[in-house]
Figure (cartoon, rainbow, N blue to C red):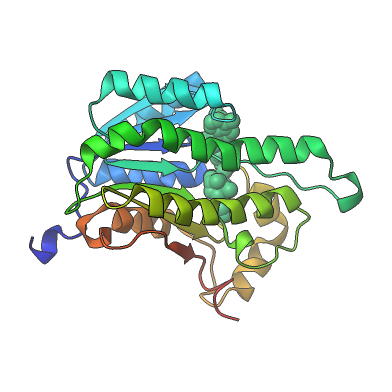
Length: 257
Ligand SMILES: NC(=O)c1ccc[n+]([C@@H]2O[C@H](COP(=O)([O-])OP(=O)(O)OC[C@H]3O[C@@H](n4cnc5c(N)ncnc54)[C@H](OP(=O)(O)O)[C@@H]3O)[C@@H](O)[C@H]2O)c1
């Protein structure tokens, strides 16, 4: 393969959960622009259809609604995918939720909601999609699973988001565990983002955005291209010899101390 093709994902089929906004949309848009056929998923059918139509102006994008906070929802999405494609080259487990409350009020509801989607959803969807990923992957060119973790599982966050940071630490370890089990036909890696514009981060960035950027070694928050670039690297020939890795994409916030 020539170096010009090292980062190609053209012709690959990808599923990006939570692909309707924020980080998921950044990745889905990057894949579509790079010539992949991209399925996006979220709970809201209207949002899926709207964003799929928007991204279809640049290539191929199809929306499928699913609630990934239940095992049944994960199974349903995997069955829907199996009805539409014989192989899946790339799965991006991006859909996630957070919960911030002072310690004294941090109750069971928070843990239930956050762990159901961020940890169990990632596990079950991957499990149900293994046959489609195995149909796409070979030892030479494995299928790819990319889990979206967080720098909040690398450093200790400022905000009181206990279930969230714990869930993302679980995602990082699940990444390594599944990587061992699914090699050599499927690689499993995680991206640990720093701050990126999204609905989840809107309040934090509005209140502390300038401060966060000023304190970051690279002096800014993340751009869509930073996230798309990392996902394209992990999904292309260039990224076929790493598995079980957690890659921070954070401007140095958690990595340069
Ligand atoms: N933004 C950041 O700075 C940052 C930093 C570190 C890590 N992350 C991680 O990046 C991922 C994306 O976060 P984001 O900031 O882009 O969040 P976001 O803007 O809130 O987007 C979340 C996406 O997930 C979908 N979703 C939520 N609940 C779902 C469910 N039960 N089933 C299926 N889909 C669901 C949402 O669509 P619906 O509401 O329509 O379902 C939406 O598409 C998360 O895993 C997050 O933890 C983000």
